[in-house]
Length: 220
Image 1 (cartoon, rainbow, N blue to C red):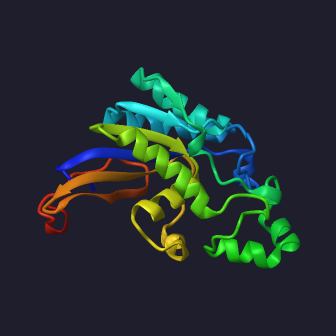
Image 2 (image 1 turned 90 degrees about the horizontal axis):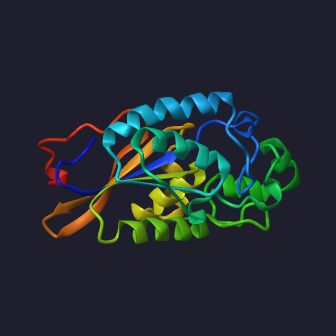
Image 3 (image 1 turned 90 degrees about the vertical axis):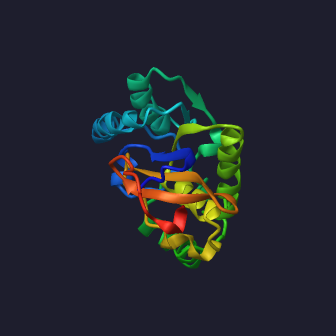
């Protein structure tokens, strides 16, 4: 869905597949490259996203995100801007380990975190609220005094934290936002309404372009 009154469109694009994704390993800040499937996924996704005619591409500094962003840059002739504030959650002691391994070593902590708690990931890592704070600050800064479309190339956990924060959901409810598949995206649009403007979720876990929404009184 897309609102014809939108002022700013933010595309939150998750990187393509990596071997650690397939193995269900906690990647976090570990700099894992795309695998062959991921390389294919991002080329296909970029061919769709190019249809939005983005004005800017801003990527996490991790290689899996940069490689994803490069596929869109090749089609749009835009320069990829790098911002480490868009990184995935730092997983602390959980990075590089599978979910069963992390349950075995930190059962209660992992269970609470997995169910949506705001505990530090992997004992020494980041809280969801920390991730939201740094990533949302990037989005707010880059969309200030801006009109158009920005593609932020980032990570699944980061996107969920951004959406939960921007949509003003309690942290305990961020888990109701479904995950993003590799190389898929969510779309936020800042729209005008009678009391000013607000962000709303136009698409989530999408692989196609937003279609206009006409005659929806809730957002007009």
